[in-house]
Amino acid sequence: MKWTNVVAAAVVMMSAHSALAQGAENPDFRVRAKFRTANDGAWAADESVGHAEFRIKSRFMQVYYGGVHRQDEYRFSVQIDFRDVSGFAENFADSQWDTDWDVYINNGFVGRVPANSSELGLSELQYDSRHPDADAGPIPAGFPDVVDVGDVVSVFAASGTEPAIGDPLPGGVAVFQQPIGELFARGDVNQDGKVDDEDFPFLANGFDPFHALQTEQLGPANGDFTGDSRSDMADYDLFVANWTDSQDPPAAPAATAFWAGDVDQDGTVGVDDLQVLLFAFGTCAGGPGDVTGNGCVDLLDLNVMLLNWGTH
Image (cartoon, rainbow, N blue to C red; front, side, top):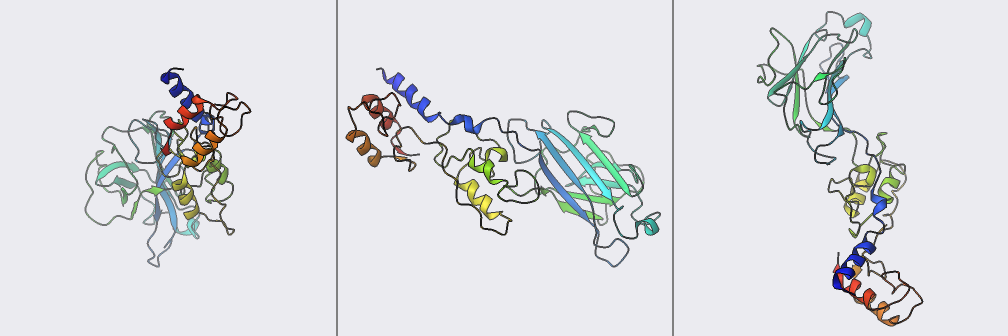
């Protein structure tokens, strides 16, 4: 048999479990800066009153985590909401909070939020990169590209003429100023605010600690929490670090794929595997030495094992 055919056989063997890494749809990736009022003793002090958020539906260049690019399909929204603050009915109207708001990302203006644009106490602004509608206008020219985790959203009470997109920060102190962060912890695949046993199957279904799968495992629905398009021990370690349940986290899942020739399934094609193959060499009873699965332990099995020799 020609060596090219041996290589082909090895690839087939290594790709046998690749379907496990395919087809799982990821949730929207969401990053948010949360707004909270100052704890100054006045009405509505120290209250959570809204956010600025990017909700990314699909990615340019097929990534999951990371910055928001103009080519991505996403919606940017700003919401400032005082309706649930105790004493709202008596105190909100004509207060310092009953105003238009100017929003900046880092040092650039991105939009004015009209006071009470949705209803009394609820002010909203939305842009959509691909599908603007009655609620969300298109992303304006000059909107920042890229916006990343750690970038800062600043909100000022509006005054005077509305700035142009990209205009620099005004003087004075922002009313709200917060960095953008990921809304859900890495490992919270179902986005219920917890990293628990309901999320574990997403890691376990395509767990590939030996990197034997021949496909990328994109995003948390495929067990990738670190953003390297793999589902391996680094993802398990991050899952455990973010675990929120009172019970202990589960042990690392079993590997779903092994390199062809890794007879003892320890992640390495080495001497121990070769000994198993040589012990059964020349037989046609199948078994662990039959690397190719053709029913016999022969030179083809040996060639595949040697092709994958070493630690992967």
